[in-house]
Length: 465
Image 1: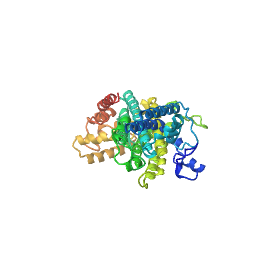
Image 2 (image 1 turned 45 degrees about the vertical axis):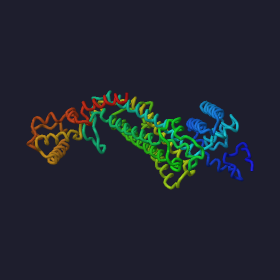
Image 3 (image 1 turned 45 degrees about the horizontal axis):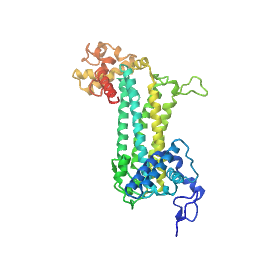
């Protein structure tokens, strides 16, 4: 039987069916609102596929030139938002093919030779992620630069270090900021690792079994900048490990941003007032005129749970799928794209907030008094006098308790008062009980001593240049 031509609005796969797709089903199965952002990468992949078909002599040179020129015209329309989407455009891939055929005629139907939407989609998402992850890594680097700049501007400012949100030992404010610089460096590493593993080309896998045409997959990979090609067609069209890996890395990025957000929320409160958030990054209350709310860090903290949910959603979607492609996989992109958008916008807004953050040096210095912040220095002093650490710890604990009962600071205690607890104390203990001395003694690599923090700041400036 002769093949009947497609009529307007008819699906590319309609030949096998007696009934038109129900409008309810069309609406339910459409993905173009989500995947239209892949248009540039879809056309990039289609041009490479066209060139590969030409190399295999499936297309003539003239046909190849016409198809590529048509694809470039479609790209031009999409970039300038002149592309008219139609109700029957179920996804961006079919919309582009439909418009290509309108522009160059039936020759447009040859583009899909030897290709399935299964390997086409797998390719588009890998191309898209490759670009988006590179952009996110660049944003993280800029965030690191801002944190290092703030650290340099406050390199001599001490503050309380905390455990259990209780004052523990003095550290430098710059040392605290550099902890986040280290975290974001690991985030960049995870994103780079994920980018390396997704940088494998699936095109040429067909629907699931490969293709009947003599296409040179290595040639296609070279056109698209892939260092290698997938080695199993079943795996290539159904693999979404790379999405899960990226979503996992994004979840860790958000976790780090959320930890920073929590500290900024606490630090900017009237109870702490360690920092002042820029007015342009805060909101007020519709009822209470005095309020200045830390909405940006609160939203980042809230959006972290959203990205976590996308990771769990992807894992759940994939956990029961048999090989190879299943339509369930259409649900991978809303989760992935939103996680990417959320992480990128969160990094961007937090970068600008931290760039304009004001640090209250006096408040940080005041917070170093009280609570026995130098107790560990006192215990370590006794250790230098030959007292076993556990005994020194116990002695110091009794001193702290006695000072609290007397309403005194450790630094206010006389040598005579200290000697009531141990005869090992002498006049040299006075030099121990200073914030600057406590910081300077942490001079090993990774410690909070001025020289170590200054060294690390210089290393980061050079690394991020």
